[in-house]
Amino acid sequence: MPRKYDMQKKIRFMVPVVMIAFLFSSAVANAAILLDRVVAVVNKEVITWSELYKMMDNEASEQMKALKEDERMKVYKKNEALFLDKLIDFRLQLQEARRIGMSVSPDEVKEAVENIKKKYSINDKVFEESLKKEGLSLEAYKKSLADQILVSQFITRQIKNKIVVSNKEVNNYIAANKLSVNDNEAFKLRQIFFKMPKDDADKKAVEEKADLVEQKLKSGEDFSKLAAEYSEDPSGKSGGDLGYVKRELLAKEFIDVLSRMKAGDVSQPFWTDRGLHIIKLDEREGPKTEAELREAVKDKLSEKQFTEKYKGMIKDLRQKARIEIRL
Image (cartoon, rainbow, N blue to C red; front, side, top):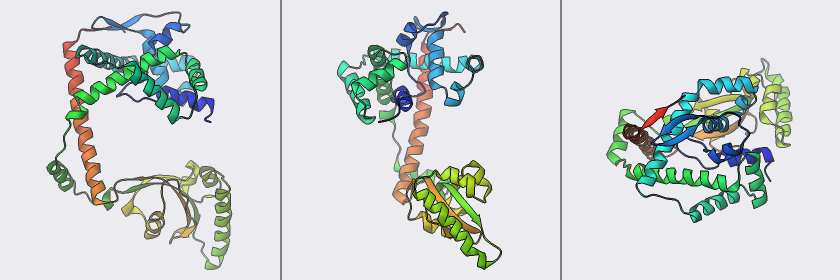
């Protein structure tokens, strides 16, 4: 079963919505907030200071949350306007969805909750305990979830279902950008590296050292920690992280080894003219076949259309709305 900390994080981010996290208005009302005020009015609906700050708190990184409260609040203060815009956009979409007659049934919300519990293998008790630790009742959570589902359905209906990318557009993009399968492939790698010895007689000692590291890896020791301890490459300081490396920049020996690996795999030690390598494939990026290349281009063009249409929709909703900012 996941650790409680991890479960709380999953509960917080389990249902993605365009550009917005949970709106914990009901939870905020129950929190010990000594001072609250209206920071915006959107078509007669108010957005409060507590809603805004709860949203920023829930979108904050772990590094941000580790800051002292006064330091964290200073950062939040600087970003009030940005996050308030997100809240306003979300509220506008919610209002428009309701205006055109869209709604979310209790059964849809119930199904979404059950899917969440199933996905993370948790029972009702663990689920509700996680919500309480976030300051949420089950009913408040369901209300927030229903709003998110409604906005998601609204975006699908108004934008996603209307996006069309033709074969001609795909062909034109591939030709204009001179794309090929190999050019588009990249690998996110980590490595533990041992320099090529000056004397061939010393290769045996290098191989023995690599064998020792390989055994440690097989016994479950962390690749990054071993890289920091043993690697003779500057990347060792960052856990052996090489980032994304394009296929054409890799030596043939790397390509041969990577052709037999999938994400998460660790290679056996292998030689290049530079030295002895042990690599870990974190991710493989880019299509491997012509069909996958075309699909990737289609996705890219679809995403571009979506972004343009979404921005246009938000602009239109804002122009029609009565919005008062009180920051």
